[in-house]
Image (cartoon, rainbow, N blue to C red; front, side):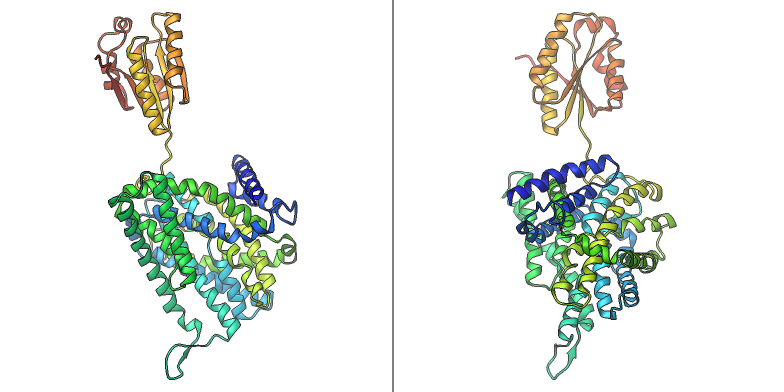
Length: 540
């Protein structure tokens, strides 16, 4: 088992990074690793690991939906009106119906079996869509109109709808579909109960998410039961996972929607806590993503795909171009989206992966007629739409979406810290280097140490380099010697390297002050557009 974990982590990571360097999404490399390690090729992954795949999948989906909730913007959602709500129902519904009708013709399915296939294929993958939309938000693409937020919310709601219909169809096909709900012999079918169950799952999911968020704020902020961001993330992830597990035992609410709602409400209740958790869940996703997509690839049955490759692709095309496209048009009708933004839904709102892997095999195990075909098409949809959708989202976003202002309170902004320490050979250099070392450790940053040489003294420069290595031993740094006017060179180097801040002494070395007129630090303060931190040597 441990050897399996090692193979998955190491190969999944490096092949995923290789795919990224080749210009493809990392998940393509991870899925390829899963196929190679599966029983069909190298037979490295054990049956025990494959049996545990649903557990890893549940963890990964919980993490990615928490990331989605922590990245939602209430104002942008309110701005879109009913677009997000319509995206949650119409595209999935029209695609499922189109696939059902096509399956009746191509595979001779009855309508309900075809609709069962439609529910599986119509579900959207949070594991592909959420990272893509959060990436677009961090780049500012489509944020002015709240397009990534609308897609995130819509995909979560659509999965709730289709999973509900899927479970009810299984019950209907297996048990005749009649349930007594009232005394006196009145009966209702599962399909007649669908609207009530759907509303209940959504409302209770949102309610439990809100209550969980309130509980977290009390425990983590007001009562201070934790001491750092790692513990905050651990407790939050545990509660989110509890909601998901509880929903499986008590299927009256959507556990995944509750987890996503919890993240959303945490932003409203305590924004600093939400920011810390955002970074924590980003770290969890690095590991969860590898397990999710490697095990996804390992479960794909290649031999079954051969039998239905062409009709399966035809089914996917019909569902996308006829069914889902109609739903996209109706969802954005009357909105302020232009044709480019509507066209962006094609790559952004169509990837399949997580849900198909989770439920694609259930009809076969339940003995539903045509279950083998359903499983094969579910696997085909993953292979085709997951990598293609992930690649196309990032490729076409710059062409189809306008760039707006990034809101750092809703997404993780990964801005590397690069500090410039301007030092001379005086005793003040020690204070400057100590200060920049402290700042670099606090921000996990890197340092450029700049020395401007006007009156060369090789021995003093060597001593300064030795002092730099001692004080910045555990920090990535670069020592630079240049010749020129001190303030101008400081600003030039800072701009050239795009540094975060300039740290320098309040008084320069005496030879510098002979070269220029006035204070070096004052000149840099008045002319630099980059923040300047002045360090004064305190004598005791």
